[in-house]
Length: 149
Image (cartoon, rainbow, N blue to C red; front, side, top):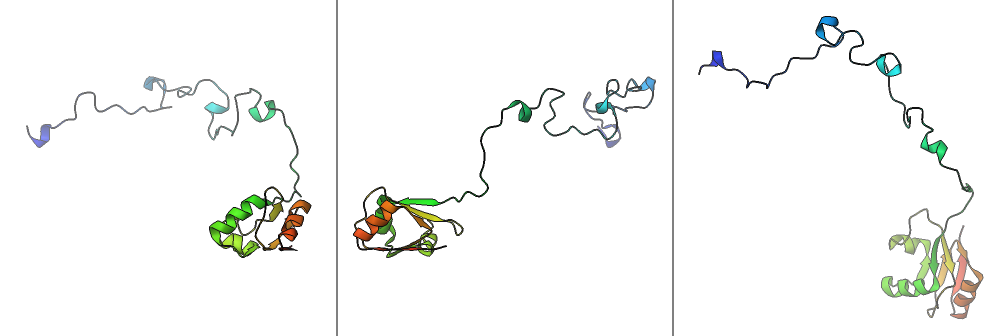
């Protein structure tokens, strides 16, 4: 065996399919693209969510509900949770800064206190919103509430 008689294995090399180079090539005429229509023409690009004429899913599925753009979302803490957080993180003041530094809220979150559970510790609360029941429970425990905007 010499360099001049090296050849690839039989069947390893295929002849290139030359499309649109006359009828003799076997791929002339419509150039393997079928007959007429957008898909056979240059520059064709399938549109997103196109389902071949079938009614698209975004039009078949019924629309429901309403999303209020002015809704204010709060990160909610119950009094029972707060008691556990005081023990775990050693919080003296329940403020947005303390919650953020302990990784309990994001910087842009608003905090609301709800009255589910019991509070035994005297604490200062600086939050965005609070329920009446929670406010009464905090004040009976000897704490104070300050609403922050």
